[in-house]
Length: 248
Image (tube, rainbow, N blue to C red; front, side):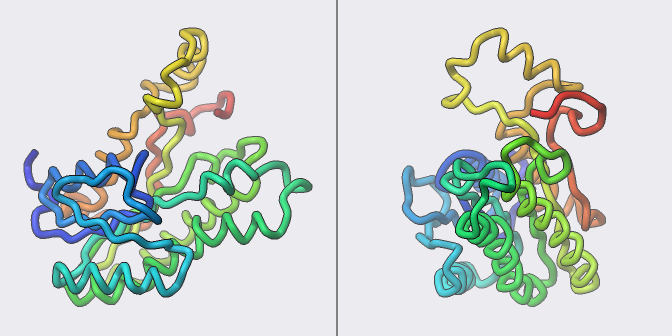
């Protein structure tokens, strides 16, 4: 690795497993001081610092940012990746979505992300600049049946990123959104039939994306290589939002 994040201090939410874990591993390899976070640490990541936090709690969000700055002296990168698998599992068509689900989904996918940005931005300005990467989803742009609350929350995240970019770019803070499509998952997709794999591949212009593909995009947006880029939504989806076709 080339140390593309050398000197950066990053918080990555939802990073005890899945995509967030892959992003954290890559950021550590590229020289960043990384703080991983979640409600409980599942598998310690060498080279990273874990801070247990429920980011739907205002007090725990504040403690997460405070402990990061206390430990490393600054905060320059934030990746908002946390999701609620339970809320996603409960999602559905609008007439089946109750108020409790709206609160659960919006609390973690939009409100907590916005609050993490609000708490982080002053530290980024003090450090001379920083980068926020919000992880959205393809369904924010192309509706997927049965994902009403998730789609709405992620669309809100896209708008949030643009607003932050507009308000804080002159102070050195950039904010961009990653919008993954279907990500091949080794555990979930291990029993996938060749027919299903061929069907999914046929929906891409290139190939199915992996978590590492998304992590590499996050690395680019977090690094100074993208210092003239802010306010964008970057699809990482094999080109599947660029052409007409079936929705995953």
